[in-house]
Image 1 (cartoon, rainbow, N blue to C red):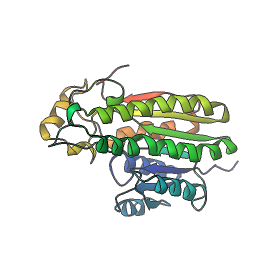
Image 2: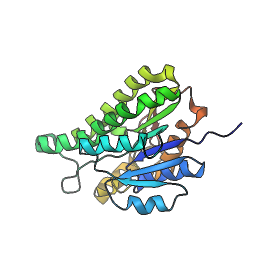
Image 3: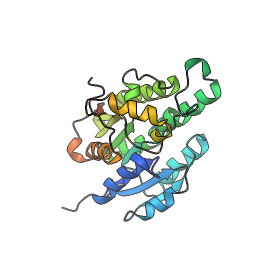
Length: 248
């Protein structure tokens, strides 16, 4: 029996968790399309056998829809979708207090963190259903699962919304051989998280049971498993990969 070669689209893949996920997929023979607004994603893709890259600004709806069309067409289909890209604007190295948030920054975060994943799911899930197999893994956050001091409300809301969307889509598509799950990382060293001040980073490590920050590779391992046929009975779950910082 010939081994099935799957194709994956990973957003936010220029570095951090996204790049680690793409590497894990590539190592087991998955064709990967790395997506990021940072042009360095092209160089990241060149380090992975058979991978390709596309520079996309997920805050622009047309670019998101164009990406979906490319994935369905020229790329050759998408069996695995990892919605990893996210933004978390800082104010002087810290999160925004509620009274400091204006609708411009609120809408920008919601567009990238929540609307773009929804659009990609909407555009790519029907083809997965036709094929009778698919995997969607949304990267949420511990901040979407519980209260984290100092985290901006817009970030918590966007990630909590991603968890809710995961459950809804999982219920709609499970009977078609598709699983939709999410992974909610705790404090992990990534380019996004390292925008915080040194004091904030130290506190985040001290406030988890493991007393350390995680690595992108540790999160990628969870995502990679959820994308395999072996994870076919895990549906609508949120895997809390946070070093014991939240035990739901």
